Amino acid sequence: MNILWLIAGAMLLIAAVLTTIRILGGPTTLDRLVALDMAIALTMTGLALWAAISGDSTVLSAIVAIALVNFIGSIAVARFRVRDDQR
Amino acid sequence: MTTAEIISTVLVLTGSLLALTASIGVVRFRDTLSRMHAATKPQTFGLLLVFAGAAVRLWPNVDIGMLILAGLFALITAPVVAQRVGQLAYREQRADSGLTRSHTEVGAPDEDAPDKDDPDKGDPDDGSPA
Image (tube, rainbow over all chains, first blue to last red):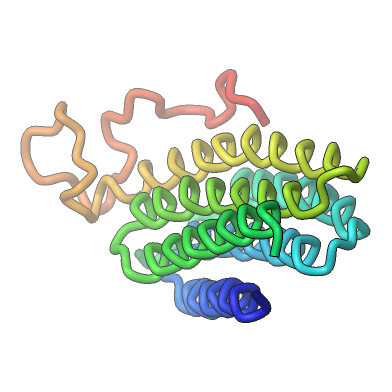
């Protein structure tokens, strides 16, 4: 039973590493924005996974707060972004 | 090892697998539009599946309402961000990729004028939600 939770956590960890690769090496700022949005969504997924493992409902308010800040930040970056010169 | 634990484990594992698939798509795809396409739908669906698994795990608790609220908020706000980023990426990638080519263009698109004969060229704030 614990092995399945460990497998889920390991998949989320691999996904976070791949998303970090795209954040660091994205050609444009839009790629970095998409990857950063997905990294924050992976953070929310990890918090929900921790709530499912431990049965602790403390982190759920943190999930809601992270969702709000994620939306505001993504919209702000998409609106006030400087268009990059190199394609 | 009850039935609720089995259901919760299956939901959480499926959601994590969808998140991993979305990250692989973000790394492997070519254009920004394709990466955004991979990063929006499987990511949101995996997030909802993990939320459902957590809700099944802590069932008679009151804080499931907050989990449902977070899931609804993710469902509402993910298409808005996707539309924003997709509009910007479409305006910038029309010049240098053959995948996103408008049907009104006849020849090769100009390299130095990415917004040529763009139908919605002008102020980027024309009635669009902030």
